Length: 317
Image 1 (cartoon, rainbow, N blue to C red):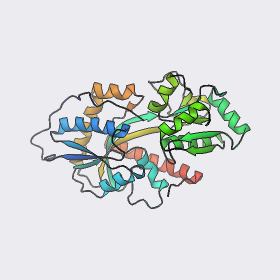
Image 2: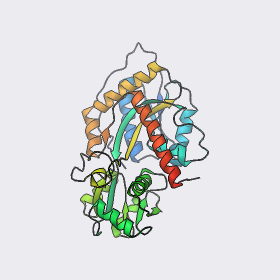
Image 3: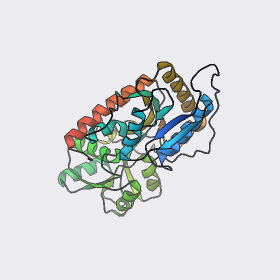
Image 4: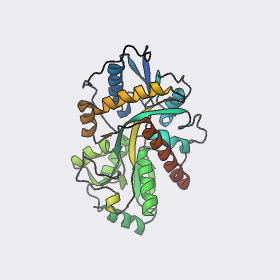
């Protein structure tokens, strides 16, 4: 997970006082508990929006059900720009994981813009005999159903990175879910579990500390934070690409002028050197772009994971 300090100050851009929006506090809903990476980045984002919009932006934590509680709250809110949501890749995944989702992740929201993306990283114990992706795949093929991988829970990006790896490599491994990456890492480090695919900011410090060996990052391009680690795609699985991402959405039918104003200020925050450098230092890449681009990402990711989840028979309810 990303641990981003909120102590830095984001450059200012004063709101146009002639604009009706906003004229009262804005609420940014975060679907995870206080203190986690989503909460920390969300608060830094709220600070930047508040400075630029001239109104307080209040972070509200609505944890539970992989973001579903927060998403439902926002979906049912008025489309007036005063209730925003900070979704992760789980927003695209949940539509396929949960059989009775009370909202549509595409139709019930207006995309405002992306914030950042980050790779996961394939790691094995430092004393593992596997020193490359091809070696690991060969071992898995020679021992079907025997190699194990740890995840931070069913349906998480850590889990789905491994499922995608299995499908593309045509191998079968045993999934061992944990309650969070923090619980999984000790068993991977000790060798009780063969591998894991944690978010780069969670796994990379253990690699640098000499506790784990990195075999590949899950994104199509190498990470600037770990440039020596090859991509899984270049290591034997062409086309493999998995990134964790976050962005900003609002309820459906948000007026276009409000959407565009929010996107404008979001682009300003993402271009701020302090905000940008903090993300990059943690292995994340700022994800600037238009509302249309972020909407297209949500749609493509929803379809991508729908197919994979259906093929793998993954459910959480």
